[in-house]
Image (cartoon, rainbow, N blue to C red; front, side, top):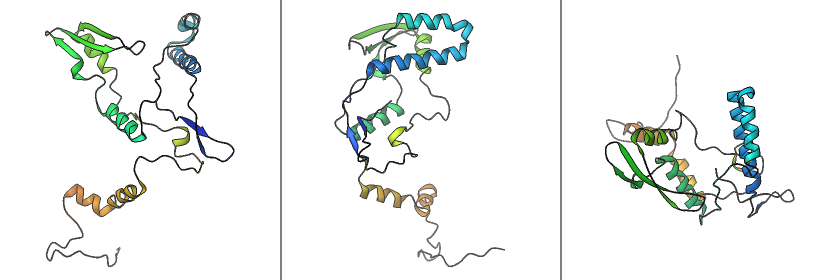
Amino acid sequence: MILLDGGVSNINKSFVNINFFSYASFRKRFMKLILDMLENDIGKDKFRKIKNSMYFENTKGFYIYAPPNKFKSLTQLVKYVCRYVARPVMAESRIINYDGEYITFWYQKHEDDKIVIEKVHAFEFISRLIIHIPDKSFRQIRYYGLYHNSTTINIDLKRIWSKEYSNFKKKCLNWRTMITLSFKKDILKCPNCQNIMIYYKSEYP
């Protein structure tokens, strides 16, 4: 999840940078949503006692990993997100050894940045990986709030590409260019004289 570092002012409808985020509220809200979803799925009779004990044992909420922004520009952030979505959840370089039955790998804990080396059976290793495979046609990128298409706030948001480059991309997405790229053939070019044909008229029976 990526959140804006700010919000829209009610006074002049301009974007205001706010370098603050309530992690305490986020932890408790995250815990409530997860427990409510489990209760609806499992049932109140079976899960209510466990749910109450979770609230009692985790007074500060569930653990979340939400570090502050480490990117210097919006372009760097977008590149990171695209790389994260397109690649597997774990890099192959983290696998230290595989003896045909057990896999030894390492990971870095978010809580204290310590390196942890773990050895598990190959079946266990695969089961941990496949839970990160999204369902078919599952949308991994969604927009909410200010960036959602339904917003009525008329302000200038930061753009990844320049206006000139965006206009160039739009020109490349016309029907003639798309057909040429797909079929490797310009349908407006005459196959006999190689001149560009122009639209004259359409007739319907």
